[in-house]
Structures are given as C-alpha cells and as structure tokens.
Length: 234
Image (cartoon, rainbow, N blue to C red; front, top):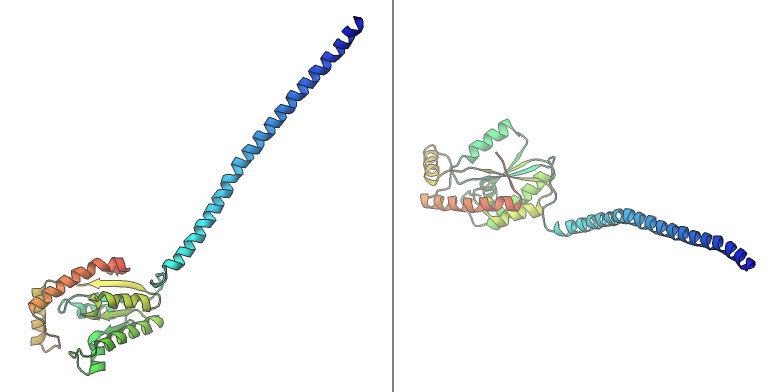
C-alpha cells in the first residue's frame, strides 16, 4: 500500500507537467498560426493590389495603343495649331485674319481655298477640280505643320465638310485643333457682301436663301466640333 502511495505521488506531478506542457505547446501552435494568418492577411492584399495596378497599367497601355489607331495623336501645348475659320461669306473672317496675323502671329501660314483654286484652275470660281483642290489643301496643311508653323485654314466650303476635317485629323502630324467661329445672320452677311461688291472686292455670289442654308450647316457642324476634338478659340 505504501509503494502504491509513493508511486501515485510520483505520477501525479509528472502527469501535471505533461498536461501543462501540452497546453503550453497547444497555445504556442495557436499563437504561431495566428501570427502566420495575420502576416498573410497583411502582406497578401498589398501584393494583390500591386498585381492589380500592374495589370491595369498593362491593359490601359494596350488599350491606348489599340484605341489610338486611326485617331489623332496626343496633342501638347507646344504643338503647332490648325485653326479653322468657320463662318459664312461676309461674316468677317478675312478682317479677323488680318488682325490676327498682324498682332498675334505674323509667322502663321494661311491655307486659302480661293487662292489654291486659282492656282489649280486659273479662276477662283471654277469648281471643276475640287478633288485636286482638297488634296492640295491637306498637303499644304501637312507641310506647314511639319515645319512647326501655325496654320489658319480660310475656306468657306471645306471647313463645314466632316470628311475634310477628319482628313486633317488623320493625316496632319501632331497639332492642336482649334475653331474660330463667326456667327452672323444671313441678311447681315448679304448686306456686307453687297457693300463689298460695290467697292469692287472679289466675292462669290450668294442669295439670301443660300446663306440661310449655310447658317443651318454651320449649326450642324458646331455640334460635331467638340466630338471630333476641336477646341473653341475665343
């Protein structure tokens, strides 16, 4: 009996030590797992965010390349300007252009529809070679912009032609696209043209009805300018 009591007294402390050791080991394992889980949660979102940012940058640059095909290059403030003068005959475009060239930019180049028509056909009112004229205007704009000159396009007809404007955007090297609009009612424009005719100035002849149609076409073009990438010049 005494031996059993001694043996029991020896086993009880050992059992307690094993239990305490097991509990401590279990707590250590739990704590270690918690630390690992915390570290993973802390690090993994950052890693995933970095991967997502990289993925977005890659996809963004790729989509930019694809979406840029056939579109105008990105424009900078240092790029030369293409300025379209938009207004019906008699709206004051020629007067404004003289002032702009004299006061603001005497080195700008002017692409004048009527002057080029005279060079091609010999007459300012001969419309038999308009395809050749259109190509000559685009080539002149490209040449001047390539030489880093600002270009003013003075053309009653072509600036209202969506196809012509898209040719400028797709063909001309990187440049800023600007529109200077001249708003005037048809009857005022006709009165100005009549006065110019009395003074002997050369002009195409237009009826008031034709000028009213011109006014409508200009309003329609105005809706497209911003969509095409043209900015208003004030």
